[in-house]
Length: 320
Length: 289
Image (cartoon, rainbow over all chains, first blue to last red):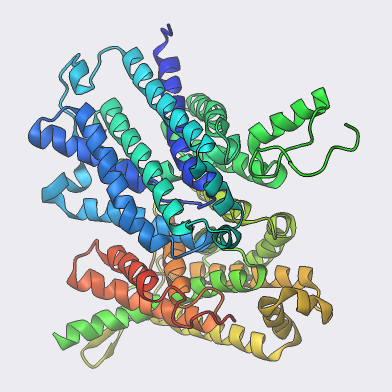
């Protein structure tokens, strides 16, 4: 379908980060619990499958599911601790947990190779071991992951859980007052979000054939997860996808123009400028901006509720 | 053994003065403007580069260049408040957290583009000298940094307690609406609060320069330490941040001494997690400024 290796690589990154963004968005967008520590689950997923592969020869397909389960299990104690906090305190605590995990994996060399990391043994074309000589195969795996993330989100949106989540995101106290079990809702959505992020960790390690604590628990993973969602449209089904579609090619092109290695700061500086612009001028993200333009063109509905991407329910447009 | 412990405690206390200075800045902005500044460490980094270039280009001592870095960062703070932070006040968590976070990313990566990732150090005549106090050795640049950090903290506390502007700041921190009804100009108070917080970060950068290398991500560690310190010392509380900053320094130093060279951060994050589990309101349980 696509022959150019560079283009395929960009598309794989788009799908992967859209998927991580979709996973983050369940917690950060719908429930408004702004995590900056999703690298913790990415890293746990990556290390679980790699340890199973190298120590026990278990296929990464099974390792991926195991990684998701480990990540989900880890979200329980981490959530129990961090959900005691609100808003910025919560964000700080999640950074702390991801950094602590990175430091632990750096420190315990005998358990998981420490700072030097390890390469994934290359078996040539071994689809059962999630290794392919054709890059296009990775493309389909990433696409399948993204489809899974979107299916889960769409299911959550339509279930009772989705309504509870939006209630928690808008006002925790009010949600509690009408009988929503807020701690349980947060715990459940964190579990799902962590599970999906763990899957992404396994895929990424298999794709780049390498793992070390600094890439697996990289702060950049936590940042990009939030970034694609916010730039695209936080708390919406397609927002993270749109964000990844815009950001990943932009950063790849900027890096290839300016010569990658020599200008390592270009990608993140560019992200930062885009993020500042979105926050100051378009807090509903690109999807919100597109929706507003669409609404103006068809003159049907007013702009959505800020930050949610959903239409305003109360009141009618005066000119409608 | 006691001498080793005492030496580790003293070393930690000295660097803790710098952590305290950074933490006080974070807590001041949070207390008054209600924004958590994820970019505080990057302003420390800017202070370091200011002192580095002044030392390299015109041979100005880093401690003397405090006189440049502090006013320069005060102006940065006023501009930051006027053109950015002001626009997201009262807009909820997402814009407030991610705006300063994006500023931090931007500054770090601009520094990387402008100055490369190289570690840059300044050699002063006193960089390697030490005072001897019984069995203890006190590094001179660290003692200077600690003493000046404590003086600046005391000056800030005095400013907040005695001057009209300082009292207005505390009033705005306690209840913004009532303070406005009493005639406090929130724009001016907020701008000065952010300016002072950044000036303290700049001071921390200059004071670090004689014994600490400047590099683009140098500030990150200070932001993380400051966050732990302000959570431990109750967000928005200046004295809490001071005490917690000093505690962070000692915890890190003891961690490095007894757990291993790469364990300082683990000990500090451990303290954060224990604080959150045991006393989520911090040492001062909710009191601000």
